[in-house]
Image (cartoon, rainbow, N blue to C red):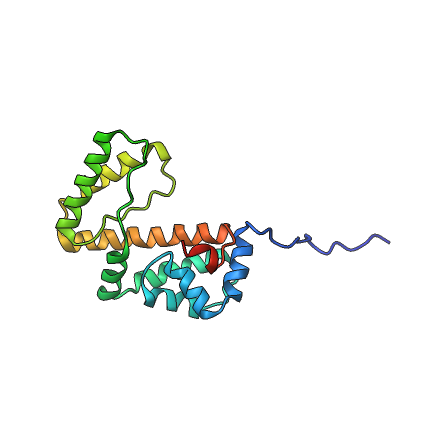
Length: 179
């Protein structure tokens, strides 16, 4: 009599799999989970809300909850999260003229909108990032403040999602994410 097929066998998630990171995130204390989330987006309300809905059954469910919590940020929460962001410096190998252009563009943006320029560069090749940031700043400098606020909020959600996905894929704990 043939043995019955019990379905796929599942080995434990590796230490660098998103599932391993999710398992650790779900098992963390509230304070540890919130601290990890705050390293992705500096809104306490966002971090508390995402942490409070644990455990998450899948990485996708966690990322969807993070997105939803981002959409629900109050104006003050969004202002605080944007104020905590900093402009990424240019790559050290960038030509001096490019570094100067980027610093000037960031200064113009911050002067216009009162916070650092935020843009998700997920999926952008490293060699194209400087151009993408400069083009993004130039195109968004002409926005009305409320229009830019909506765009910045969307970019912040995308950044938080990418940061959280990265931390999960690295299986990081709070001790690893405090840098």
